[in-house]
Image 1 (tube, rainbow, N blue to C red):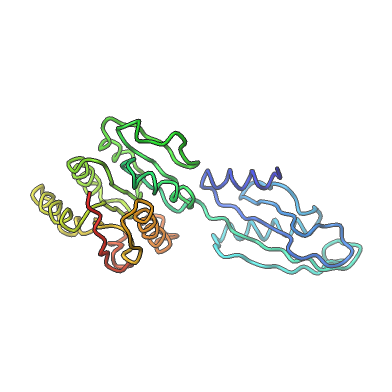
Image 2: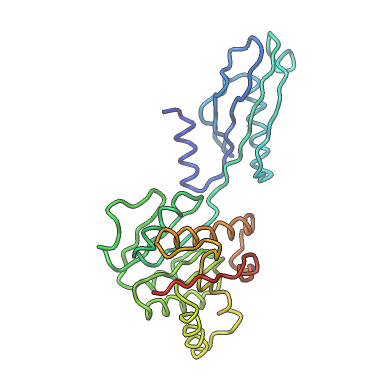
Length: 281
């Protein structure tokens, strides 16, 4: 396996930004190979595009992109000759692709049917997932890469361990547990997004109980219930999971670059069409 592949995977797993540099066009009598790649981080270089002054200049451009926190790809055309220390002419085109760090820390409470459909989808995104349940037999034999399985007899206690700005998904097997998790998440009120599975009737019941406990209407309004994109129809676990994943993607795209999103973001419902889904559990 090429060094750049391992380096790219390692940086993604650690949530560390880097730039993937690729030779996409090579014209002239130079020894470089189109398709060669290297990964550049703030302090390290992995693999090579052939060395020499071209690689030195590419390294400088990639590091500048990292320093400026650029998120869009960039093409650079180099005319090879005396200016790049080459003995012969030619043209090399490099593609610089910033690889964004993890965009979302997600906590999924519940390993039921929808949870088992949803977590693999989230694991394929630039996210880190904590998958929490009290029932060991509900977890699948194999946990997706990038997902931390948390077996806890007291799932509500796990709320205090979540990073600020987390995305919280509550879909347990027990309505009372859902309520206690909801109360704990809203008490912190430093999340980016919080979704509770259930119907509009469930939302009304929970709102009433939360107000009885003294929760402010503005805080309760941040709860997405029903959650998921209304445009994604269906009652199958995978269909519900896709709709929830779609809403999370829309949210972290809208909040990208806001490092303190949890403290400042208003209800994500402002960014999304109203949900008409009724997930009765």
